[in-house]
Image (tube, rainbow, N blue to C red):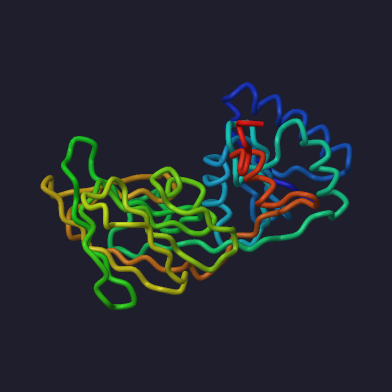
Length: 268
């Protein structure tokens, strides 16, 4: 296989991990190719946390190249291979002991996308107030029908993959990856009647944002920029999927148990 490696190599732990990974891949006769030749890769391996995985995913885009993440950070749902398990993970990759999971993405349609930003999100697109601003008003319609106007600090629009990221931290539900849904989770809503909402991923969401500061932030997988209020925004399912490598013996549910202590009982 021809493998491209992405990572935050300014971090000592990631750099040490890359050296081990490079040695292991070369011993198994795999070719390591530079990032500038990404289109030639058969697989991408990231070293770092979920942020590193997301940055690499933005570059992989619609190429269909499958991705595997080695976690040198703390939690890691996308980069779900622990450093201690790296050797066994690469052995499984080498012997074809894995499956490819297709994850859908969100796409943001707007005029004037700033240079250096992608309209595609694997995890989420968040509409947020500026730090010193008062709450914002987010008029939301789904499938051409008016839904609600959120009075809140923001709104997180997440894929099933991103349900364990920002959306979860502000009270959204955990959704099994691959589930064909989009989750809308308000951030610090003014009304307690505003609850997370799960929609079909095939719905189109339109937003109109008003703010006393006349501007707001939009974040696409953590990469944010400022927009003027009432900038028309439309969010829908992207026309392609991202391929993620799921190694034999691992699952989303085991990741929940290991990394979130899902179902654990502190009384025992």
